[in-house]
Image 1 (cartoon, helix red, strand yellow):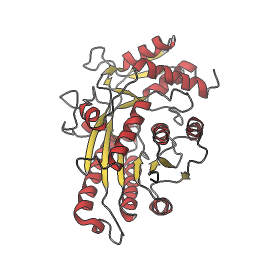
Image 2 (cartoon, rainbow, N blue to C red):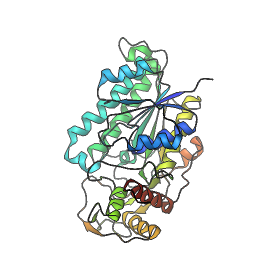
Image 3 (cartoon, rainbow, N blue to C red):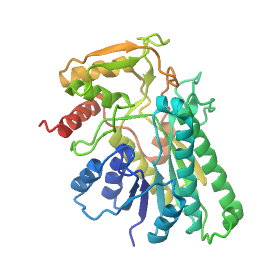
Image 4 (tube, helix red, strand yellow):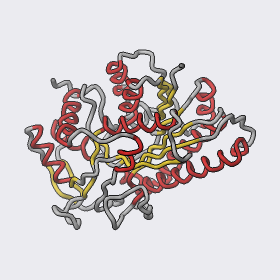
Length: 357
């Protein structure tokens, strides 16, 4: 039987590179597409070293370019798409909402358009816990009501989920009429993975989070402060109604997260979906505060960080963590790595890119 081919848009970035490794390890052919707006080739080269594959197709392109997306689908037989090509910084989205709406919506619409035009496809959307907003009941399940998004970034995730749901519904009901002039041969089916806070790096220390400029996520800021790239770590807010005054999050190891994507792709391609559109939370189910994470990093790596508490950051929710039972049961997946293991891997990656050890 021929191998199935998975397109990973945004596949040279942090999450995409780890997912690409796990897909290849699971026996899939992978095509990576990325415009390199928030990364360089470091992680893609690391993927090739980890997998021993020097022949992974790479397409330098912007998924906001509809013609290039259509051309890509015309040159490869794509069985499934995992869509990561989106901007993802909460704070930046508050300051630059148009940038986020234009990029995150246009790129996804182009992927869906091409999926329909080239015979129907399985689409795995990289969603986020931000769709739950500021919720009253924790942990959140997939049935928890979505609240008004607290940031444009979160709103783009909600909108894209709705777009995927509507396209799948129309594809099942109307077929080729979904896309005028398309020659669709099958319906679009999809899964949205609502994941929480990915952290850490691959155990090989060959791939990890490598943002351009000042990091927007906590752990790269921690590791860059630890190694001396940043003078001081700013913790946004210590006056929240939580045990230590800092936000509570569900931090999930990046390799665990990547394996959840493989489980979801397999579910789609093996015909095991119970509905044409499914949603799963991907987290650990364990809340950890920002201060706890910083202290755990110091302890596991034997370091002392220079940090300070500053004002709250616009768009941050007080607390969010997952009920993961549905993913555990239906995907046969569960987060396995501890926070300590994950923080050790993040530090090993930071030292690797600095040429230390």
